[in-house]
Image (cartoon, rainbow, N blue to C red; front, side, top):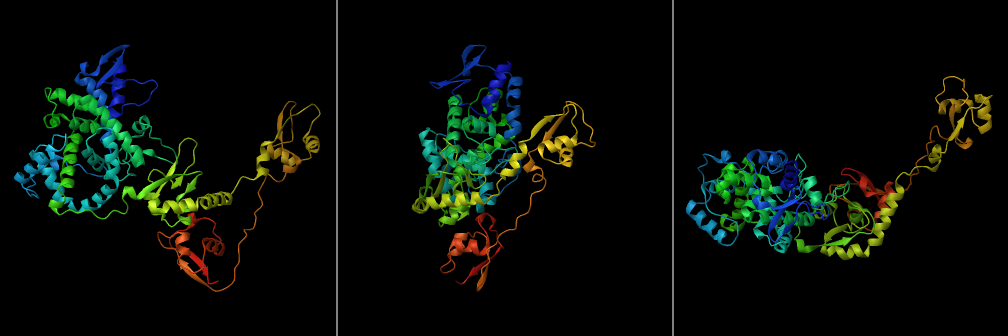
Length: 505
């Protein structure tokens, strides 16, 4: 039973893609589980309520504290809309529209009073948020649809990302569920979504979408129903199977809904309501804002060394804010260079040529910035080149000090000696003569500053400014000029409010 519980805990959160040590294989639409070396079809397994409670306890604790509940507050529970008598769409009209949607989707989008209340609540109290949300959708949805189609998943599943993250790729719940599709760390790792100090691929729109497609495909393999796959994405397959059993064997989502966890009971209606509002936005006078970019207006270039967003911005005319928006997976606004990982930067398509033209300059700037960082001084490395000396018969501190050309006070300090008494065989650490004095305190070097005389103007840095954009505001002024005039060597310290000298000649 312990093996069985471990298996189901894993499958409640993710279905492993690892080739080695795989605990199950999906072949010919049948899921098999290895238990005590006997292979049995998953459909034939029977679980008690106690088993299923154990299986899903960990998932419920984590998943139901996700951004769905605590950050976005996207799902409206039935208790929040009881007594709501206001309507934005009549019952008869809603029935017709839901029937039309149901004819065009494999989801069971049938009318019921609970769904009607959710749709009316969204239209009455959240209508103002949809234009901005639809603008984001214009950027992300074409990419979602490409991979949903590739994995034979209904295209309407794109609305799941709205319920999960409101299309915010960097959103993170208080328990760590991250990205457009809200993957926990362990779940993402199972689907090869790498997380490091520089990169979180759960925030990568493309890679996270592919991972979500794999997960949804496997959930559909288990249940054979997209509504139940949707519920299982939120609560785990164990909870869905338990609800089916408690309902008496029903497999329609609305029939098992009373037996699902409270959050999942509100999750699927939120998905349906979102689908309805997007599909009938014009009829409700909801119009998308103009997106800053469409996905087809961007492209990627693989980097050949580690570079930062501010270095790219300084050499080509693109704001750091745009780079952050298009490259959400880079946590520190730095694109690392790691062998075999092929990290790339996504740029507006009209900036690709500029990047290629100035690629060498960008890398040279990165080299220059690296050179400006304080390096460990070689003389302090030599502190490790100490000599281990063992006291012999007849030794005393003065004799040992003369032997190595150091001072008695140095020997005492290096070895924390309070007296001059020594014992035969006692170990002493001795440093070479040239280090006897240099290892104590580093001498301060005077900072060299460039002094330039002449008439100049004071420019106050504004939000969004870069050295390049500032240089364009003045005639015959280059980025190098601004750096030299103001003794700055990197754009990283360029903050709003900083005063810069701009000389007239």
